[in-house]
Image 1 (cartoon, rainbow over the protein chains, first blue to last red):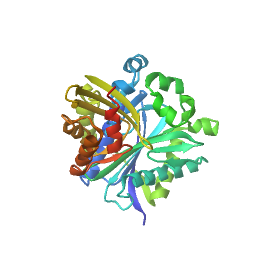
Image 2 (cartoon, each protein chain N blue to C red; image 1 turned 45 degrees about the vertical axis):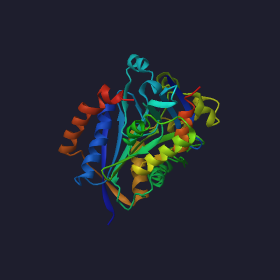
Image 3 (cartoon, chains in turn brown, blue; image 1 turned 135 degrees about the horizontal axis):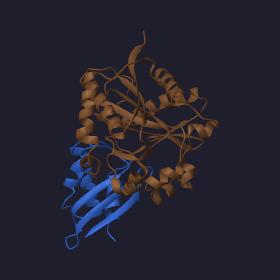
Image 4 (cartoon, rainbow over the protein chains, first blue to last red; image 1 turned 30 degrees about the vertical axis):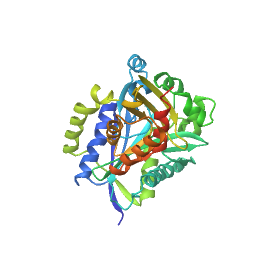
Length: 254
Length: 94
């Protein structure tokens, strides 16, 4: 019999709630209270998340965010700033000692990204993993991913773009020229691609979630069983949201 | 004096460092290391910032100090390394 992992579909939440839920699942899994968990979710209102090491004011036009009703939050994972709007976000939480997870951090990025590639394949999209933490289609970024390891537990979360409003994105993010130069791409707008760009038609969040579910099941040879957050996870998430992710102290700490 | 640098680590991430330094002694007074890199554990970056205070801003000494901190505290960097951090710090000086 295949190993069973938990699947969570938590719908659309605020940035603060979303980051708190991932953190809560990590804590619960680390305590051995919940099985390995794959979660699919969205963001409402749209939000920017920045990497743990980033400076909020260097990455984000805070005033533009306020004006446009966009939230921002600092992640517990490293990596770059992401504008979360029309996209699907996943997270996976699993013990570091689980045989499915390579000890080597970079290799484990690759393994988890393979699940996403398998998911995209379900939609007829051929992507490639671009180390360290990106997935590309036709050389353009469709997915960014970030991983942390805490309390012997791996949390990786990342996004798949369903659609992209590049103008909106770059009205909120400050993008330095260096990075663009280095990637040999002349136009900022040429760096990203979405599922809808590729397929040339609208796609539903649920359909992408279903494809990714199949991708994770295939890559890890497991069965994902639809579940819910435990009472304890909900309590923890509420605490993390209140004491950490919604606070200026956390979000403006760097 | 406070000064900043932006440095794209070869094959790595974008490093943004801000250094306040003593011009006479050529030493770091305060440093803030930001960027879209990864470090495990993440909290190690604050430790690194603390340990780099009063260090001479000179390539070999910086690299050696950063390497020793990485070793001592079992820090794993992805997208940046001791050489990259050193370069970023040196670039803060005009």
